[in-house]
Structure formats: C-alpha cells, structure tokens
Image (cartoon, rainbow, N blue to C red):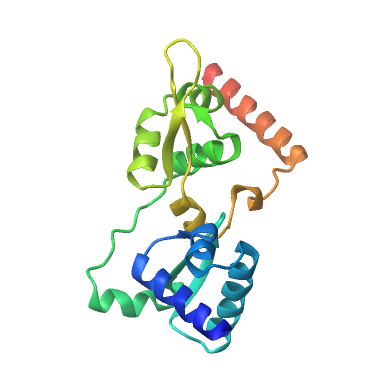
Length: 188
C-alpha cells in the first residue's frame, strides 16, 4: 500500500512540474496530510540515499519534484541555458527588506533604504522572487509586496521563518556605519 501511494505521489509531482499542496495530495490519495508528509519524507531520504538525479523539496505546505542543483551543468548541455539573474547589492538589499518585513509597501522599503526602490522592486517581481500580495487599506491603497515560492527555492528554505535571525548588535553597528558614511558624504 505504501509503495503504491509513493508511486502516486511521485507521478503527481512529476506531472505537475510545480509545487503541490500536501492537502491536495492527501485528498487525491484518500489519506491524511500527515501520512502524505511521512511518505514524502521517506521518498526524500530514498532519493538522497540512492544518489538520484531528482529530489523532492518542501516549500511551505507544499512539495515539489526537481532536478538536483549539482546536476545543472549537465542539464544546460541539453536544454537551453536558463537565464541566470544577477542580484546586485541594491536588489539583495531590497529583497532582504521585503523578506524580513513582508507584507510591505514600496514606500516603506524606500523609507528604510533612503532611496527610490521602484526599479529594484520591479526587477525582483520580474525575477519572480517578489510578488504583489494585495493592497494596504490606507489612502491611495498602495501595493503590498512579499516573497514567492521561487524565493524560498532559490535560498534553500521551506518558509520565511527559516531565514536567519538578524543580530541586533550587528544591526546597531550597521546603522552607526551608515550614519557615519552619510555624515562624511554631507561634509564633502
């Protein structure tokens, strides 16, 4: 029975080609979500142990089958080389603010960074690392932004709760450095 359920999970994940909610798999198989995750984790261990070319990853409350990262060099010899997006310091800074403060408006990001962020946010949306989550219930109804499943996959985390905790002492030091740099720039 377990093997048939695992085969069904494998077939569904392969056919879908994107993440599938664990609750949807549970409904399709007629078992609980916990049982689905037990089967999936067993499959994950088996794929890792057998040194297979595929893996199953968890993304929030969903799972996805994908090629192992270390096989990218072989994959690009067959497929067209996927466009690699370069994340500049500006994009990384903007992305980290959105990741830690989401949902957040463009104006709030700009207030933190101290400069316009429209271009950076548009690039992050284009790269599918950030998406519009809705609108803030405030005058002008500004857009709210947050991270995507693609962000989680690219940074190797299952949820935003797994992001590293910001060290408050280090944050204070960064603020002091930024203030010193701003004062130096103003005195020039």
